[in-house]
Each structure stands twice: as structure tokens, then as C-alpha cells.
Image 1 (cartoon, rainbow, N blue to C red):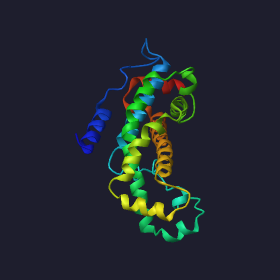
Image 2 (image 1 turned 90 degrees about the vertical axis):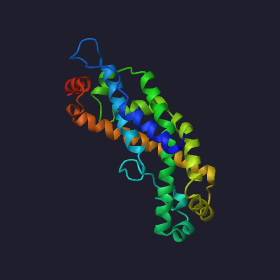
Image 3 (image 1 turned 45 degrees about the horizontal axis):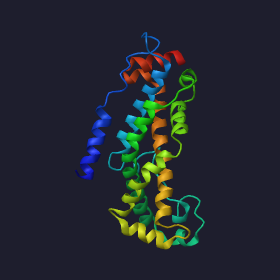
Image 4 (image 1 turned 135 degrees about the vertical axis):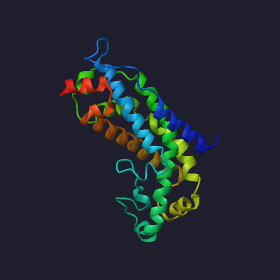
Amino acid sequence: MTAITDRRTLLSVLATAPLLALPGCASVPGFSLTDAVRELLTLSSQRAFAMLLQPGGFYDSEVARIDLPPQLGGPGATSVISRLLMSNLFKDRLIRQVNSAAEKGAERAAPLVADAIRSISIADAAAIIRGGPTAATDLLERAMGDSLVGAMFPGIEQGLRLADHAIVTEALRIATGINFQGLARDISNRARDAVYHAIGAEEAAIRANPRATGNPLLIGAFALGR
């Protein structure tokens, strides 16, 4: 199976997989606020990964686009050489390659996130429901720790070696204090943060307008939360 087919299959699963089969919350007897938090995280993550796994998903996203590390002329760059030698065109090609590599990592992260949501311990669901716009995503991030980095690293490392590898090689030649493994690790950390930012943005949107989901559980939970 090709990488393109793999991605299409994963996107299809994310788009069509049913949410946790929970039709309601306090408004429907037998369902709890814990169920609502899991439902919220499931829908938020499905939407986030459906966006991120599209071609250019990271690069085109306002919340998930990954900047270059400072050693390669990104924000906070201290190397005069990197600032001088990397033209805007060169940097744009490199940023596109970095964000494309992040997509490879996200493919590996999506199933891990889904598994974590199913098993996550939710000690105070009411506090999450009444919390800030990304309270559930923050809980998920704390629960998963650095596990996403380890899961994403092999895919990102592969992604950096593919397509436009020459641009990565030239960037590393110019830079100081970074090598290929260091770049892959840095991008893995940035991609992890981008995934949580994307999930958090979807969570905030659901909280702001739960009725748009058409999901009685979420509608009921957040009506109570207000």
C-alpha cells in the first residue's frame, strides 16, 4: 500500500468513524459528564487530524504551521550566517519541507491520540466542562506527556529525508549547532505542540457553538456548563 493510499485510508477512518456512541448527557439518563469530555475530545481530535493530514495541512494552518528552529534562521535566530545566507525563497522551501514532514508524523500520532482518549482518566469531568476553551485538550496533553514525540519522530525523520532532501542538507550545512537528528527531534517537538494547538482550536469552536455539532451529548453538557 502506498503512502498516499495509507493517508487516504486514515483520513477516511477519521472522517467516518463514529464518535463514542453516547447520545446524550444529563438530558439523557445513563450518560455522564465524563462521557461528554471523551466525546468532546474525540470530535475535536477527529476534526484536527482531518485538517492536518490534508496535503499542506500543517503549512496552511494558522494554528499548526511550524516555524524553523532558530539555528536555521527561524524566530530568535542568533546565527548571522544563517540569517544572511538563507534567502526568503530558500526559507520558504525549507519551511514547506518541515511542515510536510510533520504530516508524516501526524499520521503516526492519530491512532495514539484516539487510544489515549478511550483510556484517559478523568477525575473531575464537571471542572473540564466548565473550564477554559481548551480544558479537555490540556488534560489530554498532560495525560499523554511526551509520548507523541516518540511516536512522531520516525515519520518526521522519514519525511525530512524524502521529497526535497537537498534543501534540508543545505540548510544543515549552513547552520551551526544542529544536525539531522537534532532537526528531526526539534520538528517532532514542534509538531506535537501543533497537534495539541489544532485539537484545542477545534475544542474551543465546539464549546463556542455546541449546537452546530448536532450532538445531543455535547449540546446538553455545555448548556449545563453555562
